[in-house]
Amino acid sequence: MRGRGPYDLLHRQRLACRIGSERRLELEWLCGWRDVFGRDGVEQSDVLQNRIQIVDHAGELFPAELQLRQAGDVSYLSFIDSRGHARQPSSDPGFGQRESPESPSTLRRSRWEHPSGLRILRPMPELPEVEVTRRRIGPLLVGRRIARVRTTPPSYFYLTHPSRVRRALEGRTVLALERLGKYLVASLDDERRLVLHLGMTGQLFSSAATSVRLLSATTRASLSPEAQQHFEPDLHTHLELQFDDGAPGVCFRDVRKFGKVLLLEKGHSDARLDRLGVDALEITGDALFTATRSRRAPIKSVLLDQRLFAGIGNIYADEALFHAGVRPRRAAGRLSRDRCQAIARALRRVLERSIETGGSSISDFVQPDGQDGHFQDERCVYARTGLPCRTCGAPIVRVVVGQRGTHYCPNCQR
Ligand SMILES: [Zn+2]
Image (cartoon, rainbow, N blue to C red; front, side, top):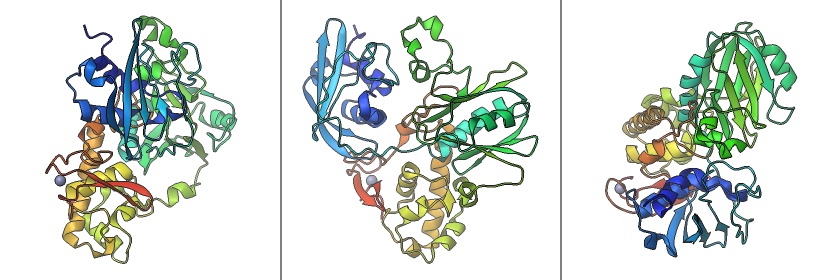
């Protein structure tokens, strides 16, 4: 019987491990577990009182003690890392995103020892996630006339006051949805433009989406499965567009409100958009070679410079340098044209592959239809510190380059 076993927990953990102020580590923990335990199930005895290594979002590897406790028919899984932080991913059935660890329906156990002091670097949605969103949301928006707009009260989420956003959008038709770097730009039929940024936790999806992560984020997690068929806007749903043809609406939900909504008047632009470089999907070896000639900075830092190439983030820079066989600390200006070609090729391939697989399910990113992305299953170096290289078996190394956690294989990358 597997129903309450640890195998089940590992799978639920993908969604559940976000309790209290450290909610943000969930996916990398899962990866760590997978790598430790494999995918094909573990015996309870393997998990109980085990010491494992966990990789967090910043790529930090730390040993932790994993404990499984059974009380009645409920399993509790907790781990205590070497820094003394206890974390308890709950195994109760209403798994998913939780706003308040204290709410009675979610917290079955509490053993927080030192909940503060851990610096967490969370990756933001990167180009592939934004591009996946554009491709899925585009058809829902383009050509449709916006009938009603619902917003939440004014906050730092809105660069344009929400009442102005509502007034400007109602009655307008969306002509196109483009991506500029990590921004989504909707062109309206009166030549205004609506700019959206997913920030760190933004979710843009169809109101017809079905997703455990979305649904359980609401109090409806306790409802029957039939009652959970569709997402209904909650207080974190800051923008909801409804159309006059009755098609599913589009929701922009963001728990942390690092996302942004900005309305640009006809003929206006914004420094955020103006300073973006060449889109990373259009990067060429020649352009990279030319752009790097005078640069002494490590190639990794140059790739992350959004003024040169827009949309490359930490995960994809590490992965692309691995596939190109180039060490992240190599001085950019000294790379040969051939190596620049290899990096450009690898970047496009990694980004395109990630788009194909629906992006990485980092933090709160879900595809617009509510499913998880799968690219994290294919990562070779990012957040794999200490794990064997998929090509040569050497342990993946983590260093810091330009203040960013950077991962590479010392054997495959030169
Ligand atoms: Zn290797």
